[in-house]
Image (cartoon, rainbow, N blue to C red):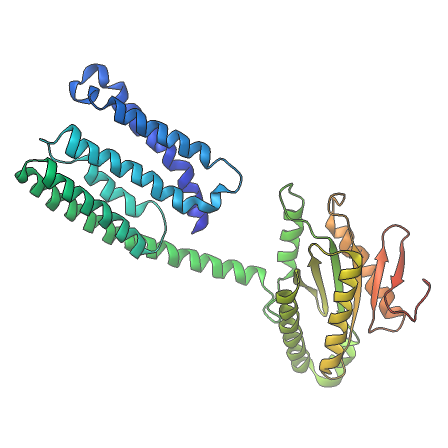
Amino acid sequence: MAAHNEKMIEVLPIMGWALMMLPLLSVPFSSTKSGAVTAYLAVFAGFFFLFLLYRLPGMKKYALGGIYIAYSIFYLLAMYLSVIHSPNMRATVLLGVFCIMPFSFMDRPLHINLFAGFWLALHTVLAFLLKPKSLALDDTINALVFAILGCYLGNRVVLLRLDSLESQRQLVVQKETDVLTGLGNRRKLYETLAYLETPMSRKPSCVLMIDIDLFKAFNDAYGHAAGDRCLKWFGETLKGFSEDWRLDFYRYGGEEFVAMGYGYGQAEILNIAETIRTAIQKNDIYGLTVSIGVACCQSETVKNYEKVIELADIAVYTAKRLGRNRVSLEDPANGCPEQHRPAIDACP
């Protein structure tokens, strides 16, 4: 929904310019248009300001507010033409705005209906104050009909769009989520790695590789059904950790999992990794434990995060070689995995 509105706020100001250019170009050939030049220029300037405003960084997240402002400008122009510029003529531009507005963006139908109702009520009051009563009555009936028709059809379109977007979201979730664990799958991980190569992406400061110790032996002893239940529990546990810390977890394959950490220094991420290891051990699920490899990185210097994952993978195998159920840090500076557990003082 937000993406649709962001695109619309890019289009509306340009559409406003184009619509204002037509009457301005026709001024030399039309006596009725010449009296409204000031209004057309003011609207043109308003859309130009809106165009510049929504080119500023961070303004796109307020796209919905900008759309309401754009349509308020349209309504103000339509009401000016109806009740001030041409009070002896029936409203025409206003009817078009009532028709188009509900179709062109996405918001709660109630909000759209209230917005249309406000401008309908305001125009009705001004029309009866400033126009001949017969024309005011005609305008009120016509505007009411077009407002009801536009809002009804517009609401239906919005609901259909939302259903379509939800279906697309579910498909994306299915493609990017590991069915068993509920974590991001390897496809999602690679999409994230590709995104990290873009200049504007948020960069991780560390990578964890988490491997369930002796999982093959567990499968052989208890069966694959028990193994699947274990992996499902493990995924739910990691999702809980992602809520507590700035970690994104992915199932890398089999019993291996990758976590991207954001904004953590070396000491912090090692403590977090140790907390994860300890929590898994304390849950005592068939006595399973994990070995965790940690690789820290300076986000401004990393060009390929797959290499950081490889470093974390080296560290996890070092942890397994040194006895499993421990955290190991891969130091890119000297290529020597450091042990987080105090009992290990030197690299093998």
